[in-house]
Image (cartoon, rainbow, N blue to C red; front, side):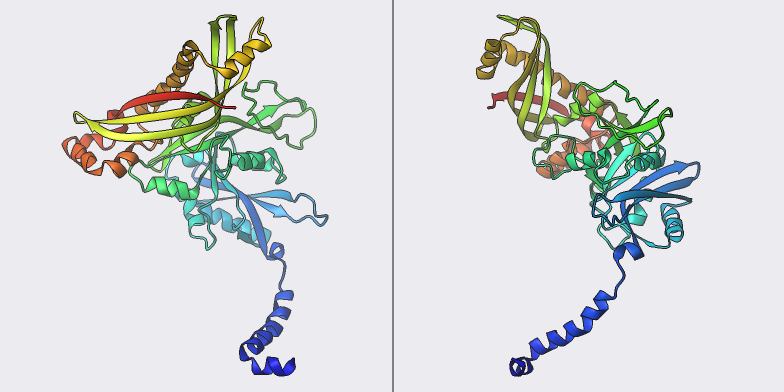
Length: 409
């Protein structure tokens, strides 16, 4: 055996390298002793200074869920504040495991790229860090999420872009922001979460009908105000390097119909009557959604057709004197009257979204990009004749909708 190793030079070199490197590797300090393993970043703005909060893992000797701690410092720039945190902890800040960056409204009023520049220049890939906005304090939001299984991290997991069901709003990353920033439309839709205050340890019973609200109590003593994590399905629009507008839950839901990545949804028909059904509310679950977009010019005007196929199933019928047979009938066949009512509900959501993004001049529905990709020559001719339309292109577009329902099982 020794004679074989001696004759095989490559094997001999590998053996020598192994004997030399193994003691060195064994003698290295654990990563947690030299680096703060950052899981989240919070950025607030206090007058002319940035208040940066780093949430990092505190290793658990028991092997259970790791505890999370937050350290906060202020600086004229984000990088300066992070350097102060490094000096206070006596460790480097490692961003390889950072999950998200949460920023307050005050921090994104102007020059949003200034918040990201320090991270973008790290050696680690920070493009996949998820962006989350809050109207409250990002420091407080991180402070109430002291474990990796907290509701804030559950929100991130359930809304991730890798979610195979596509049940919720898909999250946007730093990479998505820069792709949007350097695109013609310069717009990005970002999820928004809130902090909710309760008293005496009692949770506020005001929840939304969709059951999408998530909460995480802080560890303060009873009798005092507590803060909890709350997701109301709101979003904001970033445009031209700053926050443009906040969207309510309803406005955010309306935009979901334009998103091909979101496959599941639901909608309600209110006060519907037909045959035995009298003034009932019918909840429909969207099991799948197929969306096609077509851009073209007609008589010199840009037109954008949206074709939506919804694979639906009756989820609930609420009303008086509803029997099992009524439910079974709706599962088997939808009447023309009911299809018309369903179309009106979805179409109303689409038109409300269109009205909103035209009034506020933002394009997060891939309108301009579709024209640029498939009708580039016609688009350039149109913009040459109407140069003022370039900054307001989506307002010039005529939207047409075609909705088809297919019953699922």
